[in-house]
Image (cartoon, rainbow, N blue to C red):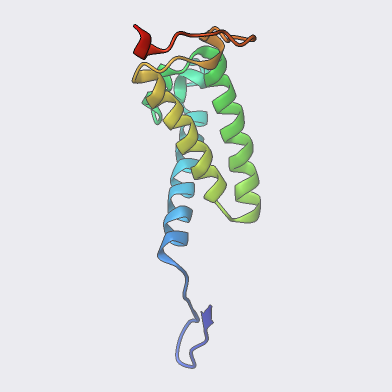
Length: 125
């Protein structure tokens, strides 16, 4: 909502959560820009480990997927001045890194059972 004032600049009222999402999105965008402008002799994926040290827990392909997704989403969010999706993407990748750090097994490292297998009732043991 915009409040027009006779004696000064117009004021804009918005939810605090919207302002926080914008702030986080801009902070993330600044970190991406800083990483992209850092020492060009270091690969970009390695430069991303400075603002996002938790990337260490992701394997190489996942780090590359993170970089590609976060850059694409950052560009799209900047184009529409809405950064909610960018913070969502960052939090999802960070949650993945936290799960791996906690010892959870990646889906691709699991052995999936394609056919049902009978099991004994534990009460019969």
